[in-house]
Length: 586
Image (cartoon, rainbow, N blue to C red; front, side, top):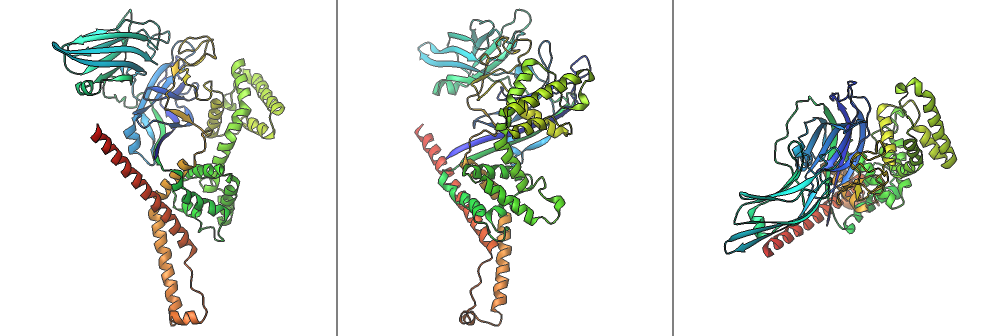
């Protein structure tokens, strides 16, 4: 049984951010880190202390991740960007808010440089028992992806070890975030934990802390550390700025699923497919209708996404949308409420367009967006913010983009490109377009193993100062963290597991419905048998009354839920037994 953990978060907006520029404004953007590694960046909102981003991301994470952090920075055209503040959320905090997740305003906290560590260190430690006492042999091999502490965007790192009252340190390697020391440091006759610290050497002022790892005496004796280890900050409580640094509105939700083998999900998938391919005359009695009825408004978008992916994988997305749309029309009595935004039909259509249309949108807009960046043209989508002196150039670039669309893409492409420049957009929709365009033009294509955490400005990368825009990234991306998008491969088992999770949450409603329908069935039977025995009814040729179809649909769904629940319990018990056997052997 596989385990899948994903983190969905939306950086909605900020408020009351402090001014970092002489003009009394800031140019804020957000960087998102998982365990001190950059995984996402929002667009910059220029000259605004109450920015709206509205950008949404999905991360596929390892099971052992520790925390998620959001940093707000002020982008500067000269020098380093100013850090405004951060919000740090532990895995436990996010998990405690499940299944709905976090959706609130959170105050920014100040950033302590000693806590802003990143990267890993490669060690090989041995504890040797000798006649005169213990000897600790610590081979410090290398480190990678260290935090930049100097204006050059690099550091001058050296490592220092502490064992009891003794300490030793390596040589300093200048101007790198990927130092290779390959030094063996030995200490004699001490006991206690081993602490390895990494520092940035400075000629003037104090050295800057880059991170540490610590191993207990038990670990040194029983399982001497060997391999790569994540650098950690010094333990300290996060200071609350009391809202003086502003706040972010965030939506964060953690989904951790145990995925069973495919065979266990087939009955559920077949029930859903049957609802579409062999619909009942009464569209309220299908398993798919039951799923819609017991789901909450908050979970309907997730259900729509899962259904679209399941049916798309089977080549049945169009029949699914036909079924949902016809059901929506037949159930609506007031035309003003037709295809309301929170209906399953509307959500499914929206998710289908994102799933199928987003890659096409990226392909259509990417050449135009890249050309704008290369030519450094001024583009403003909000007509209220267009400077009169630049109106002519804006119109020219818009015309060029439209011409490019007309000359190179089909009609749908023209509509998509032109839609981005329609002036009557609300702020939320406008930022969604900006987010889609920005994601289409990112330099780190195809989830490369490295990235540039900075930006290419002034003919060089601000992070590593390299002058080649296409050069390989200077920071390693996490091998287990991937940024999910609509291009994620279809995984029917994962989607079916999430549908099962939604049904599990609505099981009490299903049971209540089953009881109600069963009671109605009993009443009907009692009416039939009044004054007429079962034998007389059989002789009269009156057919036996069938169970109400709604009760049948509910019963089938409940049976599938119970089978999946039992399968999960069986596999979990097997996992516990394997862990117990492993503990005994060790």
